[in-house]
Image (cartoon, rainbow, N blue to C red; front, side, top):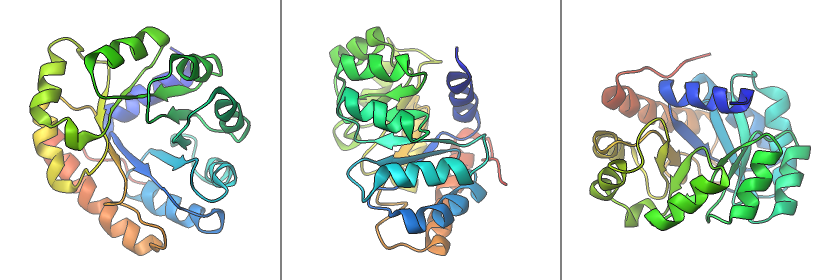
Length: 219
């Protein structure tokens, strides 16, 4: 396990809430990142279809403490992996499960969470080196499906539902065996100010603690 893999493992044990800042801009990302960090979030993702995403990734990595992993989402190609690595990214999140992209991320020393919707995709992603599986879209993979997957993909491999997750989603997925959650528009929408993001982050943190019994670390 490399240091980023170890950090990811420990973060998921404490608070597996992943902030997806789709549409965030570099001039605002640091203040939003601090609001999330103070609420206990330790993984922050900037999708590559955001404005100047690499600048935002670099700004977050420079500004936040070392115990917070920063990376990119909507990573579609090997070239994009290299760009994220050059910006200081530590985790690659994908909407799909291209094994070449997974292998490139792992070769660069980054954690990788490919998107999977079937067990066939999941096992192919694991064979390529994925160390977290993004169940996407979660709306098509409800808790009873995740529970069935858990019969054959056992912990510590992380299963992380993404798509349409709200605080009320946490408990049923937790009971089914989820390891964490990718949080998008229910946590952050373009234009949201740090106090608003902090308020929504706190609601997710409370839901996490109620379901998992561990309180997110706070700054």
